[in-house]
Length: 79
View 1 (tube, one colour):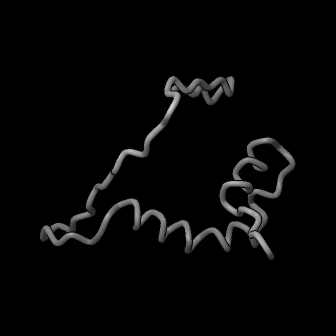
View 2 (cartoon, one colour; view 1 turned 45 degrees about the vertical axis):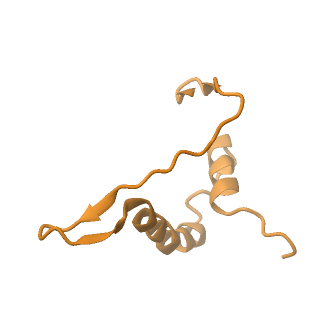
């Protein structure tokens, strides 16, 4: 996969992408596992996204704001 943020050029060289399992545990100084990093990050987003939406941080008309809103706040079916 190739993506250039400045030019927005992208290329995917796989015809049938398959998800790759990924896990990184977060460990405190006493070596107690606090959890999977992706779950902790997701919990952080779940905590902050309502505030980001309320403050209108991504309310702009630009392509980047629109793309982020579509990913972060998908339209709920039936609602």
